[in-house]
Image (cartoon, rainbow, N blue to C red; front, side, top):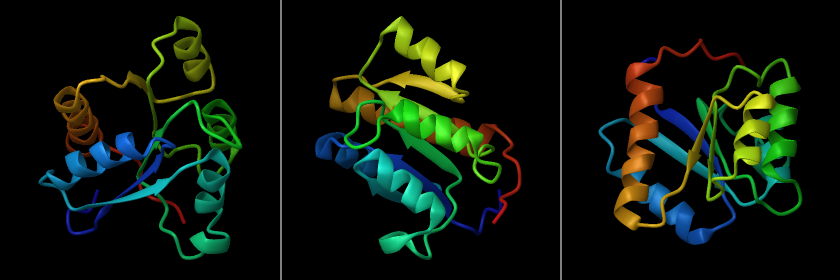
Length: 147
């Protein structure tokens, strides 16, 4: 990652409160980043395709994906992302309330990069978001962006 370039994070989250907590946790980060929030699965794909109101949208460096969303669930979105040649290398973190073993297994079967259950507690949830950000942008070496 080029330290002078902002980190682009796309979050698919239909819960306004969870989106707000994530936004606050990311704002407190020392990294230069931009969080883009969509509230349904179809908008994730429109954002990635840079269509409609997302024309000119950046290619995300990381996608935070909820499983339970309107219009298109997280599994469907994940399958589309991982089948698309230009998107499949974007890390996708499943960030959801579900702790179901079936959900975890299905997400990994569809090539999620990791699966994180959202804590209910505000402080713990904020800590989880900061940990995700730290791991993906300070520890892991990501592939170069493709347009």
